[in-house]
Amino acid sequence: MKKIGVISLGCDKNRVDTEKALAVLVKKHQLTNDIYNANVLIINTCAFLESARKEAVEEILSAIELKNSSVIEKIIVTGCLSQKFANEIFDELIEVDAFLGISDYQKLLEVIDDIYQGKRVNLVSSPKNEEFTDRVLTTKGYAYLKIADGCSNHCTYCLIPSIRGKYRSISPEKLIKEALSLGEVYELILVAQDVTKYGVDIDFNLVSLIKELSKLENIGSIRLLYCYPESITDELIEEIKTNDKVIKYIDIPMQHADDKVLKLMGRKGTLKSYLSLINKLKERIPNIAIRSTFITGFSGETEDAFTNLCEFLKKAKLFNVGFFKYSREEGTPSYKLPNKVPEREKNKRLKALYSVQKEISDEILSNYLNKTIEVRVEGYDDYKEMYFGRAYFNAPNIDGQVFFMTDKNVNFGDKVSVKVNGFEKYDLYGEIK
Image (cartoon, rainbow, N blue to C red; front, side, top):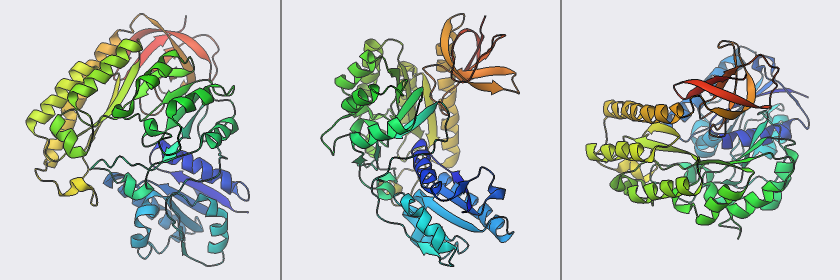
């Protein structure tokens, strides 16, 4: 038996992969949160963007320093960086004992035995869905459910299809089994590179899956992330509206709002279609919280195109928004596009977008002043000396929180009624009386 430490980088989809890897490891080994107490350190990497690859390499180099100092004995690198670049980095990072890809977590026990016999291995295989459903949760109260892997949308800026392969839905039977294995969770968050494409390859669909998951007594509610705008059907909107278990929240990664830039990105939407979808959602589902992400600085994004994006934000009035600078990734179709935006201009536009959205956010949050909202308690902030939690419009880790004071005894997972008396940035503040 070895003590295993695991570092998980990247998105919530990668987190699910890590949790499945942990379930494999505990069959024979002991997990530790203290890497200085680990014999083996496993780094589950992301490689979506240059910044993610840089973070992954920095973590690997730090692990190598620990190994050279005899703090740890072995290093295993898994996930997207291995999947895409193992053949290139195998001979460079010679201190790494093993490389595994995104579909190789079941090999971990075998690999640990091999590297302790002096072998150094690269066992990255072609992308495929893992067959097992066991997980060791690293979240509390809520859990992610990855319903598909890969992507077939082929946006021109994205490496995901070349890393994780074509879109592959996980069977509803396996997803139900996995969801049941999670135990009592007050929030199940459905994730995939494109949640709305679920079932396109297995003669099923997202609405049917939501209905089946809603029947599970251990699942308190369901949240939807990463719903591509062109695939949001009237049927899905109606399910969100009428299903009491579905949180009235939706994440729609639109990426831009200028028609020419969207076409260059390989996106199927337009400014008009996006606004129409947002208005439809708001009309049919009162108080729905809509989240999105946008990329600025894409090659060919003129001043007029950027202005169109800003004007779109002002009209759309989205509840939560994330912004990113375009990252030019070798191997993607957009890599060779002309009319590149200088880095200084990218930074300027990114700052301007956050400024635009801040005014919108202030307007939205100010509407909650002196109102009472339901909040799920998630902890106590020692610095602020306040409890904190999430309302329905707050997804974990990516949106704001609700901080509140109370003289009452509250526990993790409790639902409490908070009267809002202030806001700052993207967070609300209040109290329980």
